[in-house]
Image (cartoon, rainbow, N blue to C red; front, side, top):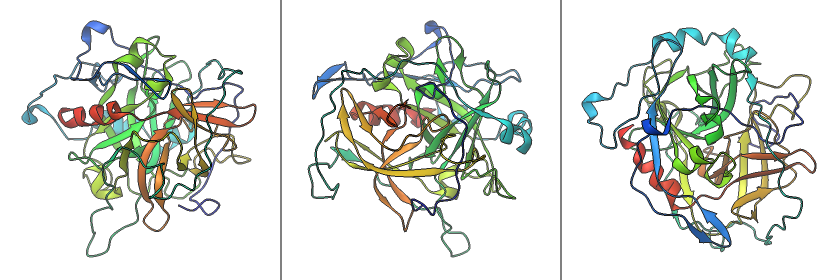
Amino acid sequence: MKNGALRRRRISVGAVLVLMMVGLTPSSLLTTSAGATESAQDGGVVPSASSAAVTAPTSFGRSAEPIPEEQPAVEVTHEADQDVLSYWTRERMAAARPLDTDVADEPAQEQPVVADVDGSSSSSTDPAGMTEPVAPAADGGAVPPARTMGKLFFNGYEAGNAYCSASVLNTPSKSVIITAAHCVYSSEEGWAKDAVFVPDYDRAQADPDPVGVWTVRSIRTFNSWRADQTDYSSDVAYVTLNNGGDANKPVVDVVGGYGLAWGGSHVFRATIFGYPTNKTTPDGRGSVYSCVRTTEQSEDKVRVEGCDFGMGASGGPWLYRYDEATELGYVRSVTSLWRPLGGANRGPYFTEAVKTMLDATAGD
């Protein structure tokens, strides 16, 4: 989608600095995927590749149970959760508020590392590795438009029904979305409950969910995030969806999927999408917004100034090599932090651990 001619926007301010959510299970219920130990790179901390997944909890009797590392395919259900689907009426989605959590501002003494680059494929901004994006499956001979951005709705917290931003990745299961870890887990509240993903959600339209709704099957985060929710270098999560939408299919078949990029420079040209509540008036809360900036290194994270994406944008993708014609690109970070004073946003720097965790979703 083009900046300025996008598919809609939203608003609702917050003097808070991060866009955060919740979810918790005792550590004894968590299983880990094989991974690397923490190490330093470019002066920052690299998250361990160790991660764990649980079945998505609901208010209708399903608890957050640990998922074995090698779960047989026959044990995995792909059918939509009808109780959760019925709960999320259009009225409840429209009334949901952006996840709002109190978190400390970025350090005033921080000195970002800046480079003047154009983000071209031949520059030093290239990542160390990438997976490829994919367009939606052809429907009757015609390829429908990509609708990879959307809202992740959930409830069961102090703020009631809430949402974050999320986007679809191209994976073998065709069922994985990426968002911020603070949108699915906190030690105080637990794992996100009753979660659904709605691609291309726009409450201002007659049909706010143009291709339907997908219920959540499982949630996976870094163990380092669950151990320390101030470790925003680990603020990444994967959510595996059931088949769903109006066509009852895997989400990638219907909307397409972004690729994933990791490693390499902290500096790259990013097209950032999300549902920031502070970007439009009087009420653009239901619509997606975009911003294009060149990132800087910010300790062990990446940062942009001037986008000023507030509450609701958490988990939205930072896309490398975004193509306006195909509306596809490579997710290289997600919105994690917001500094209202100056309009700065920060996201985790994607190391190979992020790819390792994505591979681990194969059994989720």
